[in-house]
Image (cartoon, rainbow, N blue to C red; front, side):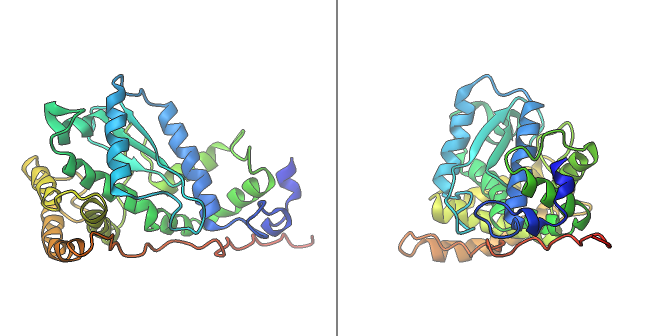
Length: 285
């Protein structure tokens, strides 16, 4: 196999990325693979207006995948899948999956026209921030056991790295990204990352999208009325998230009212120069 000849990532770097693939190269590859895999396992909504609505909101809030990485920005690839669960997720690499259950929960019977579009923008802004603020990247960097085989596979075969992928590697990718089986969404991020995604998402929907920031608070209040999140034992409760949003609201109202210019904090993400360290060369080679 070609991968076996590639004893270090530096020996078979990706075209245009220097001697080794960057963390972003690896993350975008596995994110796109996970998105396509999840999409293939799902049934898309029969109403094309569902995806049109979500794509319209994503475009309006102005978050463009790749814009924070110093490379050509690509639009998000939006799909709505037929699932009763209330889920939405944005993947590294540009994929976005939203369940019909989430649309019905937020928009009610008005979906796909959606009288509560600002609340939908709250959900989507939160999910996009997990990508553009590098939260998936933080997960990937902790998986040194997974990085070495991924770097070698991607460096050796950039276009077909995922062909005949080892089941253990597939499971590792899903685990690293927090992708769950049988639902659209992913396992929640760390407590501080969930709180930051709320705050930055509020900036996106209000400052970039022009939605009423109060819509974000109303969405969180509706979650509380419905019983809150199933993850609240390990992560911020919806009550805590609402309190944080109420404090951030004052900041947003001040910043968004001046010049109408986006004031979202710069995302924390790897730069193209931040390469994945080379795997250790086996002794005696």
